[in-house]
Image 1: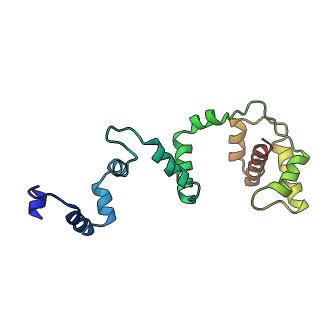
Image 2: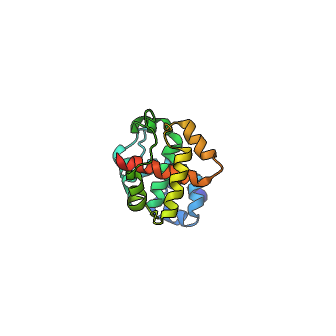
Image 3: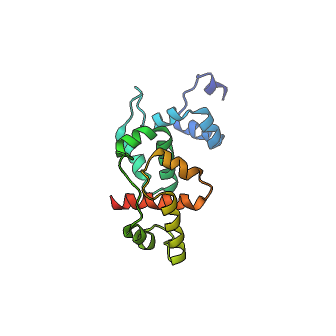
Length: 169
């Protein structure tokens, strides 16, 4: 071991395998930085440039890995929020909220997960919408209003309406 540490003996694959078996994966990760691991995998080249093909393959894996997909989406939404808005062309200008038959049909038939099945729930949603959202223009101020409103069901109705707008696109 002393000869290995003092570099008097070359570390061949067999010796490296034995040495690595003596430490845990966490110990290894503590010793080797994330950049070094990316470099060892070939994603990051020695000159600091990225192998975009390999990086895109990692992203492609996220399609089938729910945890990885959510981690990437969370990171992108936190770190690149404004760029994402520009890229998606998110603009609130001119969108006026209106309760219509299309939205009702969406709630009954197209809504993801639990569809609105009872007339009482639909009537409650309609009353909330008409009282607080009808005729208002979609804006950041409206979003703040809905988020901070004491009736949390308004948030649900608003979220469903945004999903409906997306569905209509």
